[in-house]
Length: 33
Image (cartoon, rainbow, N blue to C red; front, side, top):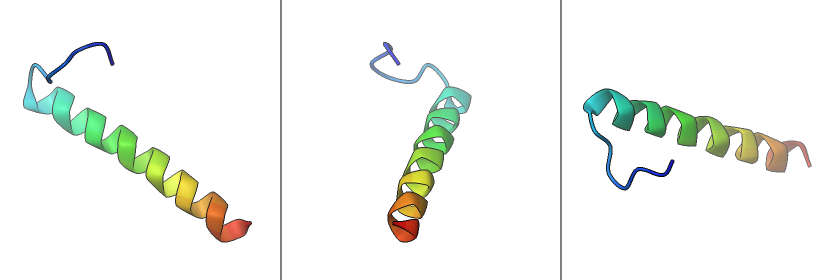
């Protein structure tokens, strides 16, 4: 993600989805630990 700001709403939403996946995976790992 070299871009400073998203060039469009689609890029912004895609970034949010990616972060949510990472956060969910991290929370799942902690829950299983």
